[in-house]
Image (cartoon, rainbow, N blue to C red):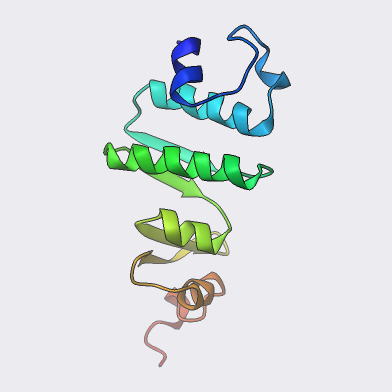
Length: 130
């Protein structure tokens, strides 16, 4: 399994017996993601999967997540970078104060609309007050 994940996810390691914690951040992320993908999940939940990674490793992780979407896996991506969220997502659920303030079609929205829901302007508590 380790050999397959190393090959499938282009993980740079001296050997499959090398300690994971000694790998670079991007390679550690690919090992973890590869392990989870290998389990063939129906739902894959990621929270800040590229935090602290360089741009190349980040794009690699985004590509792997998009490949899972194409295979029919429901990918839940928790993040804070609106550009990335809008690029990767089909729908965006916006939370404010621990409550859902809106669910948007990522292809039909913009950062302004998302930002308004993040502050509840235009969200649930303002419905019907216009």
